[in-house]
Length: 294
Image: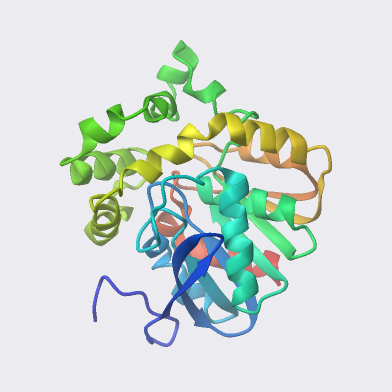
């Protein structure tokens, strides 16, 4: 079995595809059958992040998991990394694949993109699972501030300011992608061993190619555009059921507080892990999602 491939619940390889939408060529995989469930990964991850979750969920759903613009094997254009535009990428992809309505699960920045997609097209998203994220304008910047309660916590988001600096992160991290991203992601986990060498390999493969690091930081450099987007969209709360899952050892109940600010019907839950739910607790997460998604 190829450890760099993703398999469904029957041991079949997922189906790879590519579509050009909204000016970018996206790579994606599909697996399983049933109602469509869209999975959106965070930063600096790729769709391979879901390699433990897809076999659990493909028993019940048609899984669609793209590499977000700039990540993995998707195109890396020079711009368009704000939440609004990435949401448009995904909406057009799902439309091309023939899915007019669907369920969505997102973690980390994937949760932010999921929120943006749902806020733009609420008629398309049946249910939203929003996990382990602070939205720009609602807490993301506050957790990055240099102050004792952040520095001595388990969740100081120091990287937000660093990544926002033009060109310097690319210069310093280039050639050290494996060391930097491997340590960074493991530091955010309660169980560091959950970040496997295969997962780090796939992240490094995507971001060490030509232009591969820049999109990671450009997601953060769109913070002020994202704040404006969130402020505008929050004027109307999301009407569909929202499942807010926080980890006990990272963002936690702040996920619940924020979800209640932008959605009317919120179910709150925790997982006993760190920031990377889908690799730290894949079976438990899949059971929770199946119960919520129906």
